[in-house]
Image 1 (spheres, rainbow, N blue to C red):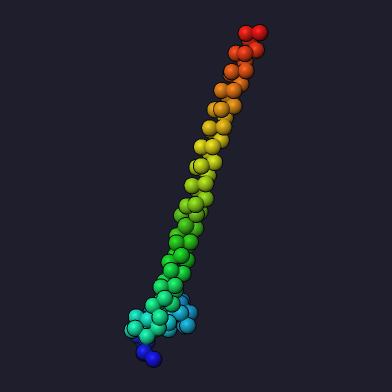
Image 2: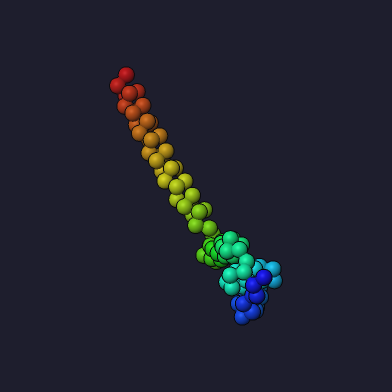
Length: 95
């Protein structure tokens, strides 16, 4: 079994990473653990960082994109309703 990189292990632990994950990551950098485990742990940490950044900026990017789409849809529907009402008014005025 490959030894773990103690400097990396201590650094990760000091930053709040759990002992098991820190050990797996430090072993993976030495070629001991499966790189798949290390990639999954890094992906999980990256997703947490992204979520924290979204919350610091005032909300997820996905939600603001959905709000923009909803506003655009409301505007389009209102324009269609207005057009239909104008057409109906013209028809009523002719008869």
